Image 1: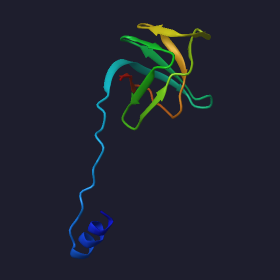
Image 2: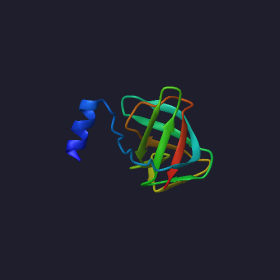
Image 3: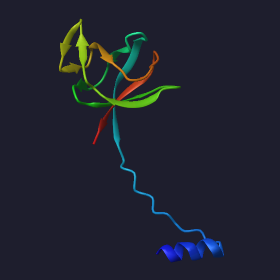
Image 4: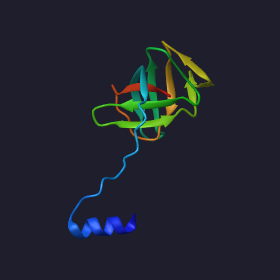
Length: 109
């Protein structure tokens, strides 16, 4: 195999690399970012549909925001909770800057 690679390099043929298949991830809309506190890196998220639980993986997408992270803590009225149903405005520590209006999705695997 190594010699085939060298031979193809000398002749000028390009070898085809096998690309791994990407797993299709389903995104479930959950809510929207209402506010972001930069110094403490906390986002206020309004849960509009479905619910958010601890250990869920959220995908936050906006005009200049695009990242995913696991939910480590959720607070409602300054009290830690484990599940936030639709209608709650929660505080959540985030790993990157988010902006008002960014959409929040839950990844389903």
